[in-house]
Amino acid sequence: PISGGRQTTFNSIDEGLTPPPTSLAPSYVQHRRGTKHNSGQMALSNNNNNEGPLPAITNRTLTYTQSLPPPGPPPGPPPGPPSITRNTSHKVIFPLFILLNLIVLADRAIIPGASSQFAAFIGSAYDTPEYIKQKPDLGIGMLQSSFIGGYGIAIVFAAHFVHRMKWKKMVVCGVTVWILAVFLCGMARIANSFFLLLFARVLTGVAEASYQVIVPPMIQDRGGGRAGLWLSFYLSAIPMGLASGYIYGSILASSDQFGWEWAY
Image (cartoon, rainbow, N blue to C red; front, top):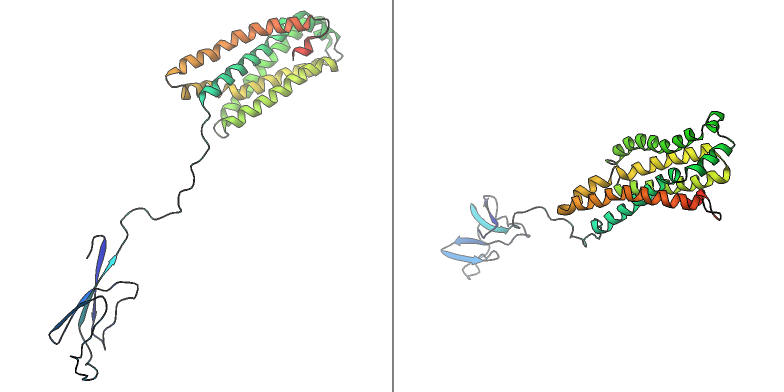
């Protein structure tokens, strides 16, 4: 047999010779009447004497070789073009996260940066409870701490969903909710509603939790040898954002043309 092939032997003891399957290439040796035939097809000789049909051939041995494919995994469909889906480079993702953290932290500092203007709003809002109107500092404390309440509750659920959702979807959903919440903060001044502003501040904490649970582990995972450097940039956005928010909020809140609602 040839390399990679298989040898099979047929023994025919019935009336005549049963040929091998047509899909196989026979290679056999036939001995009859002292004549040896080596051929790819059966050759029967009558000694060229026209003696009539030969007697039945019995106990004839046939040997043929079947070529088999080399061993390996079963053939599958041809490979398609390479996928164009690749992980976004950390050199693009990380600066965006740093900028996002800077803006979000600036939003946190608007209320303490314009505390007198917010105290006046709390005293004039139509739905502010009376005991909060008498103590506007209590209302400012509630507005500032409401973010922490929403953040602390939402981050537990965000940590659960981060294992069941793609991180990009979570970040996009969180940023979308944050934009809506900031818009509602500005609308609270137009609607003259304390509780609308309180609800919007809670919503900003919920939105921020959706990406704060993703970014630090991602920096550690994709930052490589510079993960500590990227993480330091990300964390440095916290004090820088707060400082810029104090200045930004106080300037707009004390402006004659604008008000604190335009800070949002």
